[in-house]
Amino acid sequence: MGVRFYKKRPDEDSRPAETGAEMKCLYEIGRAAGENRNVEEFIAKATGLVREAMPSPPQSAVRITLRGRVYESPGFQAYAYHIAEELASGGETIGRVEIYSGQDGLCLKEGNYPVKALAGTIGSAVRRIELEQVQEKLIRAERLAAVGELASGVGHELRNPLNVIRNCAYLLKMTLSEKNDAEAIKTVAVLDKQVDAANRIITDLLDFTRITPPSPVRVDLKTLINECLNWITVPSQVNVRANLNGVAPIRTDPEQISRVFTNIISNALQAMNTRGGELDIETGEDAGYTWIRFRDTGCGIATANLERIFEPLFTTKHKGIGLGLAISRRLVEENGGRIEVESREGEGATFTVRLPLEKRS
Image 1 (spheres, rainbow, N blue to C red):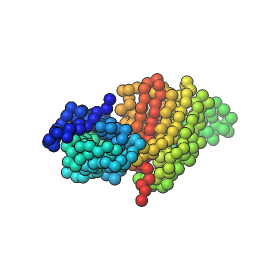
Image 2 (cartoon, one colour):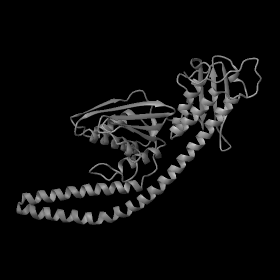
Image 3 (cartoon, helix red, strand yellow):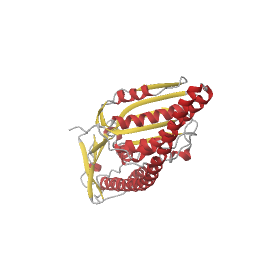
Image 4 (cartoon, rainbow, N blue to C red):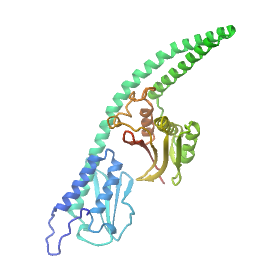
């Protein structure tokens, strides 16, 4: 049974009263703030909690506006009776909470204490989450700067000797072809292939340090995802199912985002390469974002590694240097979105990319 805002009897005075139910509602909001590491998830959760706290949830609705972005409880309806309270953070008005109901009641009267307390709790939680996000970004930026400086220097230094090796391999190949030494020519071909592999690693290192600002254009996600699937060779033992209907075009950088999708799909296919499996790709919209979900049935990710998979140079693969997901997260964030992961070892992984919907004028 959900938490309910306390309703005073007509014979009670009008002094503010905090009941156990009201305190529990505020506690649930505070706990939601601690469990959600980004503002959007917290506000979306809060709309549902507030609606369930109303005396009659089926005839209630909640709308929270935060810095121009609107979040509404499921099945939102603007009922006849409502109350609104401003959200404040650090002395700045950042939005408002609106509570609608099909029934009149004291909880909808101006100056209602629980609603004021609720708005204050939400505003404080938003400020705390945003400060934590800023701190996390600063720490990550320092790490990325250090890794980027190292990667840039090492990458350029390695390119020169690799070019020398490639030129020598070319000369050897020309000389050996005249002597018809097939075994030696085959060995030189392996050498040439490994030089290509080393150059790809260097390219990843350099790309990590020089991500350019996005150039957003109107993009049809269905077309973009299908193009990514066409570029990738899908193993015969893996079944890819794509449900890509029902989302509007968005404004984003198609080259950068296609790189993200390609990396996630490639990782999923590698995780299922041995035993086979299924990759489901779905799209949808909620809370001002378009989401693209990639769910595989591969080997999954160990719990201890979930917090580290987006760190540069962290990898559990035998091949690779651990930059794919780090670059993917940077690209998604540069385009105003975020990337999330859920996984259990042995049960597959789910990556969700959230990109902002196109703002309507």
